[in-house]
Image 1 (tube, rainbow, N blue to C red):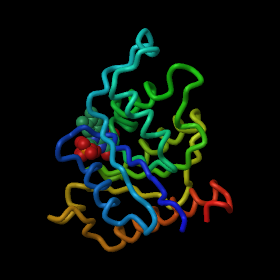
Image 2 (cartoon, rainbow, N blue to C red):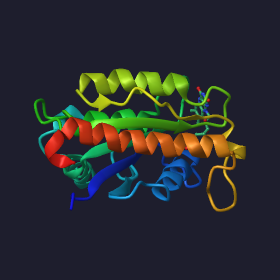
Image 3 (cartoon, rainbow, N blue to C red):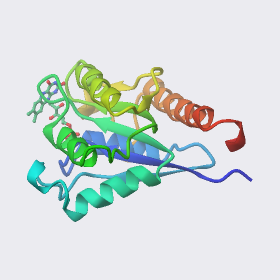
Length: 189
Ligand SMILES: Cc1cc2nc3c(=O)[nH]c(=O)nc-3n(C[C@H](O)[C@H](O)[C@H](O)COP(=O)(O)O)c2cc1C
């Protein structure tokens, strides 16, 4: 039997009632068979200071270990001022230091995002793609999942109300699994 694929879900919002976290939780309930999703929020990560990169705080060590342990990454981002939130960029910066110690390298990954705005985090996601390109994350190009008007998108159970959007989430998760197995090579299937 193939081993379970470990997917790390990184949530780029610290807000208690975050729509981004809701989207990740909706994904958790839809994970394809043979996978497990571990959700990580970015609480407890201080502002990056390069003076401290040789002795990172425990939350950063934990983040790096979680990335290393994962077979693939699923990153959910809000959009702040047409880009990714500082907490997400800050966590990425910590995780990639000191130079040469980059747990993101060669990881398969997929992006998604939710916003109350009408553009569905598209600008943030394309910025995030640029950042992850520098880290050599192998991101899935298609399908994309951009949830606009997120304040109306979820029902009381936290599932996506709209069937088309729910189906897009299914497709994204299935594509991430297929992409991960493809990058791992035939021995993983
Ligand atoms: C500082 C800040 C900047 C924002 N800029 C944008 C933006 O550029 N585009 C957008 O669609 N929403 C923007 N928003 C609205 C967010 O989509 C909204 O606050 C959303 O709920 C954040 O995600 P969360 O619910 O996961 O915390 C901004 C919100 C904040 C706090």
